[in-house]
Image (tube, rainbow, N blue to C red):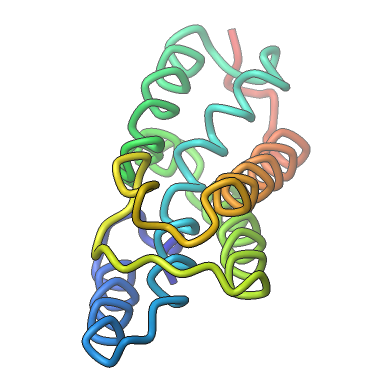
Amino acid sequence: MMCIDMGGPVNKAAYTFSVGLIASQVYTPMAAAMAAGMVPPIGMAVATWIARNKFTVSQRDAGKASFVLGLCFISEGALPFVAADPIRVIISSVIGGAVAGAISMGLNITLQAPHGGLFVIPFVSEPLKYLGAIAIGALSTGVVYAIIKSKNNAE
């Protein structure tokens, strides 16, 4: 849900649900939601790195900014890519977000802070595993998008 609309109402519903569970001392959904929310912008950056020839110079520059925004849990960093190619970006983002969330939940990683990004790493139960889940999810998104993106708008 975190990856369907990059900061829109579906994303906010998933976030609100996870925050509500913190009050019940259930912390694994928050970790999964935050990991998944970081995936789209980081994944778009990965795609611009591994499939440079499919992106314009301005898109590659947007990928750099998207990476930094993703590290700060600003999902909206992926919006320029969504605007240009909504179906492919959303599909690849949902795949990567699901991978990151599933890994996070499967490893029983918890997060007691109602936010994401590198700023909350001290509040994550398994920081290295959490970062690994995000990296694997972002790599999944980047590879999927690099494969399915068309070349027609590259310079």
